[in-house]
Image 1: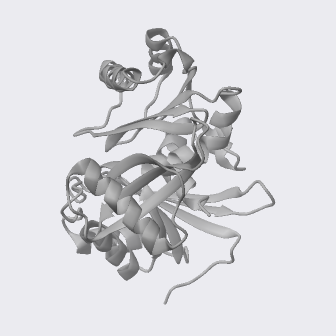
Image 2: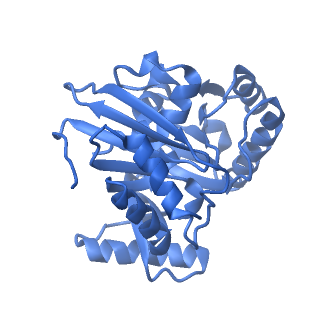
Image 3: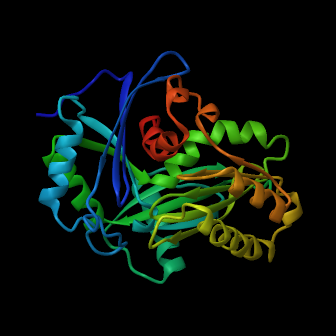
Length: 314
């Protein structure tokens, strides 16, 4: 039986290759409250990331971990953050979005198939729209596609464990939406900034013009980019993205670089600022419009950001 809380209570679940993180958020006016956070480690190799093949190598064991995580919590409906490398992502402009959902899905599918030169006859599509930064009418669309076979396995295992997955999107997108109000505030008035998200599965760079995404790059990582030895690699990856973006855009207009990362250090933000001559900031609990979060230690907050963003999705 699926149990449902009232609309003011929401749950978010982030699935990482090494960890499950579940949070509970309860609404209170315009500022919700974090009322619970739980984690459970995953055995090595239980989640093997792929955009094509099912990711869970042992569904029975994965279901056991999920049931252990939610035991006694009466979760029910949950928004889910999945690892970035399971999806294909594209940016495109459109003068007018189709009014019908089916037509919009066809448009998103066409752009993804054209960009990646693959057929996506069966996929889960998610999109987010922004106003165009060039002043032209219409929208800039950020869209992702998750192979239906990959998504169905996640959904079935969660359903069998007693959860009801609702919104399913990439962990870095949930992180971006979590911090979006604060980044907009700090990057005023021009809103030209970089969002760098580093998880145990990937590194994602998004560059924004006037608050609208103009560039995105997701790179899967074989191991977590944490510790001093990883800083040089992170800086090199950011430079690759800036070089690609700078071929067509004016890099001098970018003023801020925001980081959401597990294991982020002052050394990372200082070196990012010095190398790229930007105002660099590691995002943390103080940057979230959510009561109860400041009680989390920085490392726990960083690991919870994807689940928090998922819980706050509407």
